[in-house]
Length: 410
Image (cartoon, rainbow, N blue to C red; front, side, top):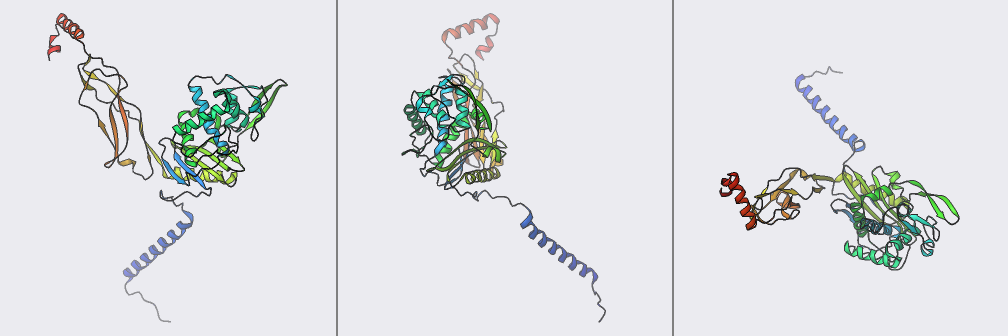
C-alpha cells in the first residue's frame, strides 16, 4: 500500500470542516423533526370530530373557528344556559334575592332525567336552586325556577325565545326550560356560543357555581331534612387546568353536547360542541379547541389611562370641559399584528353649552395600518350648563367688586 500524502493540508482542513458542518446540520434537522415541538400555525384547524362546533372569544365575540355552526340540533341540558341567564337577569332587576325561598310544584317535582329529587312543596333558596342547575344539571330545579321567575314554565319559555331573538340566535327555539327532548326544541353551535357569552360576560358570578365539583345540599320536606350531594356533570373542570365552566347536556336525540369555557393569559374562550358520540369525545374536542385558541390568540388591551385634553366650551358657565374614556379597548390578535396598532383621537375643536356629563363628545379610533379595527367613545366628564344673562351679570359684578375685569374682557 502506497503512503497517502496530503498535498494541501490547509485546503484539506477546510473540506473536513465543511463536511462536518453539513453532517451536523442535517443530523440536527432530522432529530428536530421528531423531538422539537412544532408550533401550530394560525391557519391550521383544530382537530375535532363532533359534527357541529364553534370556538368564540368571549371578550370580543369573535368566532375563531366554526364547523357546521348553523345546523339546528337538539341541545339537551345546554338549554339551561338560557335558563340561568334569565334567572340572573331577574336577580339583577331586583325581582328576588339569592336568599328568597322557592316552593317546588308538583309539575317541577315530576321532571324526569337528571334531577336532585325535589319533592312537591319542598322549599329551597334561589342560591341552592342555581347550584342544583349549574352543578348537577337538575331538571326539577330548572322548572321550579322557571315557575318562580315567570309564574309558569310556559311563560318562562316564551321569555327564553324572546331573549334568543334579542341575541340574534336565528337557529334556536325552546319548548321547555330544562332541555328534555321535545319536538321543536333545538339550537345551533353558534347560538349556544352567543347565549353562553351573554351569560358569562354579563354575569361572571356564574363561575362561582360552575367551578363547584361537589357540594352537599339539604332537602327540606314534610318528612324532615336530609342531605343530598351535588356532583358536577362537567368533567372538563377536572381534566383541563384552564376550564371555568359551563354546561353539559346529553339525551338520546341530542347525543353529547357541551358549552365549555376556559381562561388563560387574560384570553377567555367559549367552545360549543353538539352531537358528539360520547362524553370523552366532547371533552377531547373542547380541549383541542381551547389549546388551538390559546396557541393562536393574544388579547391586546389598552386601558386608556392617558390624560385627555380639556375641550373649550362656548356659552357655558365654565370655559372648558374635562373629558374621559368610556372604557378600555380590547383587540383579539390572531396573526401577531397587534404591535402595529395605532390610536387616533377624534375630538371637536370646541363645544357649545349645554353639555351633559356622560354625553359622547368624541372617539378614540384604533387602526391596523389604514384599516380601523375598533373604537372607544370619549365622554364628557361633567356637566357644563349654559351661561344665562343673569349669570353674566353676576360674574361681571363679582369681577368689578374684586377688580378682576381683565378676566372678563380678555
